[in-house]
Image (cartoon, rainbow, N blue to C red; front, side):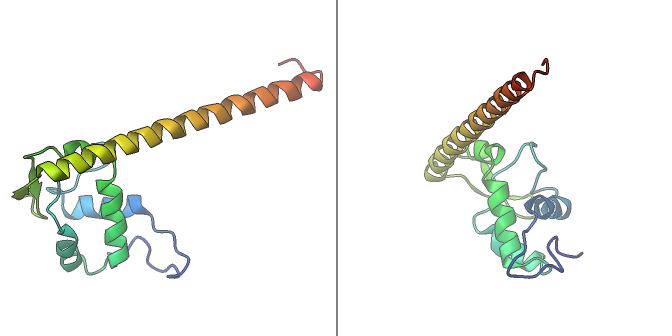
Length: 144
């Protein structure tokens, strides 16, 4: 299978992390879940296993796919102390410790806060655009 970023110049390529995540979901359905689906914590250093199992993916692609996968709220919510960590076959090989659970909880707080701030900014921009449109329409004498 071609890499999701194959054929694009190395220096300027934009890697489609959604496509990379989909590759992982398709190849390892017992380990990776699609967007918004329930996730399970991954084995520590699973990137080494992925590099061996996916020679067609670059180190950067694997890193970006894992960063995208593990940085979302659904994954961070799964990082509860004692939860099983799975390998590429879906077998539990370890458990989430208290330190990792605490770190994930902090990251989740940050992610949710950032999303709320971005949502507020988008709403403010939309309201400003609508207000400007109303002013423009009124100045032109066109009824809104």
